[in-house]
Amino acid sequence: MTTGVNSLLALVRGEPRAVLATLVAGTGGSSKRLGATMWVGSSGRILGGVTIGGCVDARVLAAADDVLTTGREQVLSIALDDEQAADMGLTCGGMVRVSVELVDGAGNGAVGALAVHDLVPDLFAQGRDVVCAFALDGPGTRLLIADGAAVAGTLGDPELDRKATATAAKFAAPGHAGIETLEGAAGAREVFFERLAPAWTLVIVGASDLAVSLVRLANELGMRAIVVDGRERYATRARFPGADEVHVAMPSEVVARFANDPHAAIVIVAHDYKYELPVLRTVLRSRVGYIGMLGSRRRGGAVKQMLADEGYTERELARIHTPIGVDLGGSTSAEIALAILSEVVAVRNGKRL
Image (cartoon, rainbow, N blue to C red; front, side, top):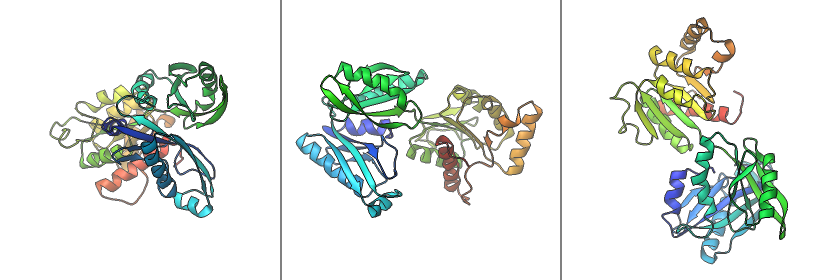
C-alpha cells in the first residue's frame, strides 16, 4: 500500500492488463519495507518499486513482462551477494522474495488488489486497525481483517480464511508484515500479511512560497496536503494545484478537524501570532502525530512561554518542533521544505531526533 491511490487507479484502469509485484520477504537487511509494490502496465508504464532500484527491480520488471505475456504468475526468489546488496543499500547479502501477479484492468482476474484501495479508507475512517492477507499461490484475492475480524474478501478457502483471521493479530503493530504458513483445506499454504496504515495528512498553516514547496514534496512522499490561510489572495487553487484541499478560513477551525488523527502533521509556517497561538491551543492536547512551527529559537521560546502562562505543561509544549525541521543548512523554500518533511518522516517512523 505504498503507491498513491490516484496514480494507481489511473494506471491500472487505463490499461488492458497490469502486473502487481509485492516485496513479501527479505533477509540481509531491507531497502524498502515488506509490502512495497511495483505496478507495471501492459503499455510498459511503471509505478513504484519493490526496492530502491538496481538488480532486484530489473529482475522484477522482466518477470512482470513475462507475466503480462504468458498470464503465468510467479513468486521470485532473488539471491544477493554482498556487492549486489550494497548497491541496494543493504548491509549484507541475502535473499528477497517478490510476488508477481496479474491484474485485469477491465475488472477480471486478480481484482482483489484494487478492491483494497476502495474498501480500506472507510475502515480507517472508523479508526480500525486493518491487516491485509493474500496467499502466494492463490488467485490474487485479498482477505481484509479489522480488529481481529474478517470484514471483506477471501483467500478462496474458508478454513484458510479462519486461520488467517486468527493469525492477523501477530501483524497488528505498525509496520509489521511477513509470511506465515497455514494449513488450509487443500494443505499448507504460504500467506503474506501486512498491516495497512492510512497516508499521513500534512496540514500547512500559511499559504507562503514555503507552503508551495511543502505541497510538492508531500505529493512525492504520498501524503495528503491541505493548505489553509485567512488571506484569499494567497490560498488559491492556482497557487496550490497539487494540494488535496485549499481553504480560506481561520486555520484553527480547519486544524480542529484533525485533532483525533495520529496520522496528521500540523506544520505552521504563517509566522504570525494570531494564527500560531490558536492553532497550537487546538492541537497541543490532541492526538496529532506531529506539530511544527517555523521560527527562530527565540521566537519559539516566546510562544512556548505564552502558552505556559496559560497553563500548558512542559510535556505538552515539548511536542512543538521549533525551530522546525532537521538542520540541513538550507535557505531556499525548497531546502527548508525538505528539512521540515525530513523531520515529519523521522517522527512518523519513530526515529529520535
